[in-house]
Length: 483
Image (tube, rainbow, N blue to C red; front, top):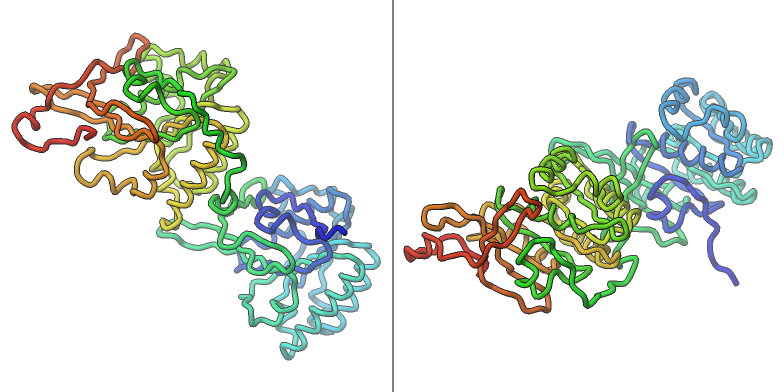
């Protein structure tokens, strides 16, 4: 016996996922949100998707505004197809019927239209007006029940759109099979759109709030990463071999290189060589085992200029498919969108090396700081499962004092390897230093090494063990050097 519920494919990226596989065919849903939240766009996006799949859609408005204004707004979106209007999707207004004849007449008219159009999808835009037309909660329940009953008999899926606040005590809430709540909130000085599956009868949906945005494609939902990837999509291969860093003299200190499919972080202040380290690491990518640079700070053009100054053949590697560069400026970003963009490019390229410059770009994008630890857990677990060896950066003022608090200990515990990069004052000269602070399940060289940056194609390279710093020689603590 097949107990699987038939689902409708909405073609709204991410929506089917948070709904547990799509809207249940023949069920009724409320889409609730304040004016401007995106209810009409979401309903029309679903309607046009169903029409493209060969279903008949009846879109009924109980609003005073004309359909011409609706079509004008929808025409800017990619999913809108004017040829579908009247040919797959029928738009009618029953505002006058509701106002002059009431809920009973509205139900009768809807039954007639559903039968005449042979519709398998009904969108009722303006449930608030229907609610206000009833004299009691019983009237509203009766209206919803009668419409549901007829729709269920004909196998029709119903979407009720309303700007009224729907909670568990609302008469509509108790009647329908599902409730989608969408909202636009003010987070500090920015606005953020969120969607929540508040009710999902007979279906396991993803709980909580999920970010979404409205663009030329319509609505795109980004399921919270720590829920969508609570377990990685692939098992961690835990490969036993090592990956060279591309830094002359460093692999030996790491015990043979970075463990394959591990996640490493470079911690240090500005100018200590973290980005240049990343360029060296990516330089070993090949068309067969590509590399990806995912950065927040420097544009692809500036990275190419920097690589050229170091004597690295950056442009040739990009053109050959050995390297893919993704830049997301640290302006206004959505946390989960960044993660999906990153994972999509890793999967699409089959990357085996990944450099993220830097992790603070994800931290700055979050509107809920409490989820950042769980977010990083899901992201790093998925990267390991994709068999990509990852190096990322985290900028701090110095390696002494409270640097261990940012990134937090909870995040650091999720990272396999930690490498510190620092400036040290030796004999009156400021030198760059590097120290391996952690390599999971491996022995490593704990001494602090001096590094240089060369324009001869070597980039960052280890010169040798760093002499005692001036501060340490004077008996002070100075800057911690990886001890």
